Image (cartoon, rainbow, N blue to C red; front, side):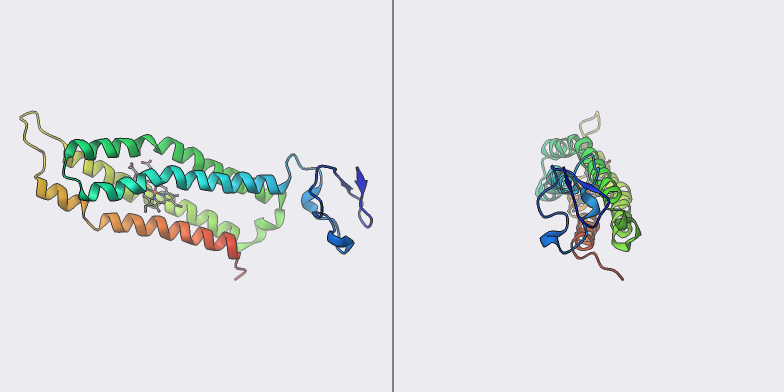
Length: 194
Ligand code: HEM
């Protein structure tokens, strides 16, 4: 253990070099004291969770566009089924993003008083709710349109199915998702003070 001059705290050996008082000019960084896990590792987990979320949700994004040009009902159902299978993993990674985001706030309490922190959380919540009300029903609508009646006649005609698949809803879902993701990325990187 090393006692840092000018502070009453004790710097742990596990802290990365240079975290506290770089070049001996400033006071030790509060992040380095008595933490279960260093701030940098929580940030690592936070970014890894976000990458995991985008990777997993990429399946639904790919399916959203792949079905646009598909006319085979069986293939459309199979693709939507695959997308549905990724939803649980998506929620787990989303939970990890939020959990590690809060954890970062607790290791760096000044974040709690900064607008970008709460705005990014609000944007994530708003994007999730909008997705729930727009993207989720769209998948269900497409699946219902793919159904074949017991008589063997499709519930909706091929033309109607094609219209649903190519409707503006795909663009609306993309706008919500990309808009939400882009806003969060901007807030995380630039941390505007307003
Ligand atoms: C911050 C970014 C995003 C969040 C938080 C988010 C969240 C969600 C949530 C909560 C659902 C509902 C899942 C369910 O319970 O069925 C969903 C579904 C969906 N999202 Fe996103 N999403 C994001 C970005 C995107 C982007 C960028 C796109 C496309 C360009 C997209 C396309 C879809 C599609 C197609 C579904 C339907 C999946 C299915 O029903 O199988 N999302 N999203």
